[in-house]
Length: 82
Image (cartoon, rainbow, N blue to C red; front, side):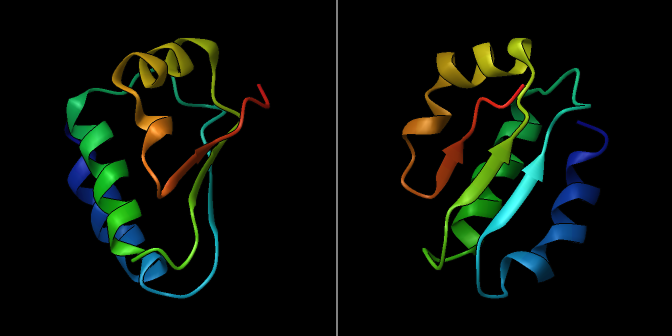
C-alpha cells in the first residue's frame, strides 16, 4: 500500500509510450489490493497499445492473481516464468 502511489507515478510516463511493457515480478513477495489496483490502472493507461506483461511471477503472487482473475483482463498478460 505504501509503495503503490510511487509505483504509479514512476510508471505512468512509461505506460503512455507505445509498445509492450514487461514488469519482472521475480522479487515480489507481497502484493495487496492497492498494488493490484495500480497494475490494473497501469494497464488501462496503456490504452490498448500493447499488453502489460507480468513476468517471473512467484507462485504465491500467481495464486492471488488467479483468485482475483487479473489475467482475464484484456490489457494484462501473465507469464508463469518463475
